[in-house]
Each structure stands twice: as C-alpha cells, then as structure tokens.
Length: 380
Image (cartoon, rainbow, N blue to C red; front, side, top):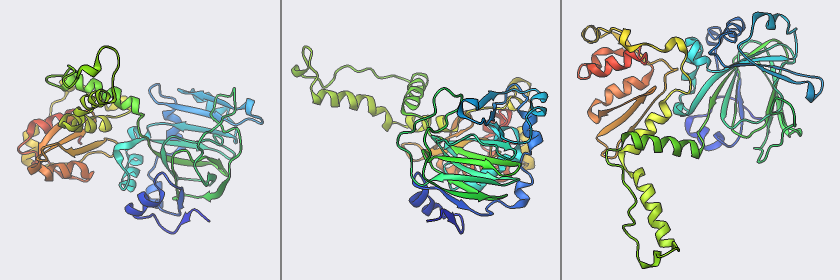
C-alpha cells in the first residue's frame, strides 16, 4: 500500500494513525513561494565555515570502508575539491541562523513544538546520501530544490545493527521498504526507528524538522537539579511509616512502596509543572549572534507600551505553558526564562504563543516582564 497521501492529515488523524506508527508523503505541501525564501546552498556552505556552527560532510565510498564523515568548520577549498557527485553537507540548528527557514515551523503547529530539536538542512549533488540508517526522533523531510529518491521502511526496526569500523551509523543489512521520488514542496514524515535512505537524483536541498524527546535519565537528572535550586524546604526521607518489619536489614514491599511515594510526591506539586515548562522550552542551541549583554541593552518599555508597538515571538524561540496545581496561574517559559501569570492574563499568554504580531499594550500590567523578554531577545 502506498504511503502517499492526498493531503496532510488532520491533527487528530495524525496522532491516531501516524505519530510513532507509520510514515507518509504529501505532495506539494510547501508552496514555491515559501521554498524560495529558505536558506540556499551557498548560504549553507558559508555557515559550515563558521566555528560555532555544527556541520558535517559525508562522502560516499565505493565500499563501506571508503565512506568518510568530517566535521566543520570547513575551509572554502574543501568545497572546491569535492567534485559533482556522492557527497552531502549537513548543517544543524538552521532555525537559529536563518529566520525565513525558521518560519517553516509554523507549518507543523499540529506537532508539539516543545519537543523540537532543530531544523537541519542538507545539500547534496547527484548521488549524495548518508546511507541507510534509523533515527531516534520524529522527522519531517521537506524537499527544497532538486529531486531525491527515498526508501522508507514499512515497519520500525526493533534492534538495528550497523556496519562496523566506519565513521557513520549505516545499517548492516538492507531493509524492506517503499521507494518514492520527491520534488520541491513535497514532505515526508518518518517516525522514530523507521529505517530510511535518501539519494539525490540531482543537486538537492532537504530541510529536516526533528522532534526529539529526552531520555528518562536526562529528565530525572535535570529535575533533581531544579528541585535543589528552587525548592524552599527540600524534604528528607525520615522513615515516617516504618515499622518493626524494617529492622534490621530487610526492606519489605510495603516499605519499598513508602519510599516510592516519598520520591514521587514531588510530582504532585506545582514545582514539577514549573520545571516541565522550563525544561522543554530551554534552547538546545543558541546562536552566538543572538546572545545579548543585558547590561548594554536599553529598552524604552514604557514607550513601547504607550505606542502599542507590535511585537512577536520568533518561531525559533521555544515556548511552553501549563496551568499550575491551583489552576489559577500559568507557568510559562520562553527560551530559558520562566515566569508565572494569572489565569486572568490568558490573552497575553495566548498572544505570546501565537507567533503573530501583537500589541505591547498587553504588557501594561507587566512592564518588567516585557523588559526581560526584550533584553533576552525572546521578543522582537
């Protein structure tokens, strides 16, 4: 059965039928007017020469041992010597460096933006590929210029095995999948653990929007640090419910349950909701040019509010919001800044999350908040 759909599924159908379940292709979902504004190959190569930008260059070999993967920054002469086939340049975090490309994120607002990893962009001439592989994240592949042939697995791979002693994670064995050729404006959705491979049929640009969840250990470690920093009276286990059956060495199942309850009780407090918003909105990467020295920034907040100046949150800046335990206050995080607003300020909360222009007048009761968001370059 073909994975090509007539149109993008509704949000409800997407999560019910496809999210974590199966891939699909939608033809012409992104208009030519939009793809024409996205980062081009020359700009991509320029970024790959910058020290702070994460980039890599994959060169396909005749046999597995000949494959190469080099990491940037690259010198211009490297690109001059590459030839006209069988290589791929991949650059991470393009949403932080190219505002027009970051606008792509709005096309996928039916997905949890707080799980966004980044927009990675790849350029490759004919034959360029990174090999057959699997990813741990959900990805939407948007085809820009050019044409590529993708092979996508029909089912998730439970235990992948890779070719040994090469600098890339390329699957050892071929996988059963469907092939599809994509052209400008087409998109492919690939769930985690579904093997895939793309090969350029002509010089091509692909824009990859990845949604990646953290591991359990990463979340628990970060939450423990947050508790230490923000809990006013950190509780200690005092064995409140122990009985004589806990002495001297054996811990019964009722006491194990008691320990579990002690450790998980914190999840019922508002502190957990505050941490969740902070954790998922904090940027995984901040472009150096976006870092501002707050002491050197002067903002006429009162003037902006009085003039009702239009502001907006850029798509590259993450936001997450959730009601606190009392349901009368929201915990909100924009970028790495976390704050609270009462339910009565829901219009302001909604405006911040809209990614559309809104009036600075909404901050009339919160000028200090507007000051923080502006000097942190979280609103523009």
